[in-house]
Length: 281
Image: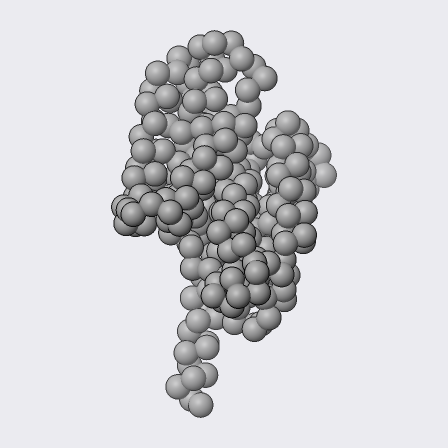
């Protein structure tokens, strides 16, 4: 911990990592609360894994077609939004089993990403960092893109808070009140997709859903109001991310995995204490 605090004052990459953790906390807390409340975590998982297709395709075009302007995260944004819309539209309008479509999008996205990575010349260490997470590799370009995604997610969440709240808790009542449930459901999926892209830089594709749900699960034990759960979730996300970064720095452990272990550990402790109180009561 002492090494981390000392190096934080000297190294720009550590400062970028801390800023990224703080930027990720707000949309994670807000959108994560919607995701858990609406019970669409499994959809978020499919979107997260389909991101690899966009990352791989963008990197392939960078190297093979010499498109240096095509940042891998641009591909991730496109792939996540396309996946979210496919799942949402099929769920709403097609006569297909939703779990089958989600599984297909999940598997195809991963497979397409692996194919692009395998055909890209050179060593794709940066793409592997997106798969497993490495917040220490965030660049200034990444930081600006993450900030832009942050602003979009926060702005939409503030503008449509009441509509999204109604869609999450009571679809039928929302329809009676004239809310276009289908439209706001698709909007929620798109916001989830953007948040997933942001979190991929922090903990990677594999563990992104854990960071999207565990802080909310912990926060829900301390609040029964949606807005307060969002605030607490954002605070817990920042705490987990920065603590994971600091604790993993000295022993040279994966920061994403350390973050998830901390989040999961606190969740288990809080759940155990709650269960004990119920039994004593």
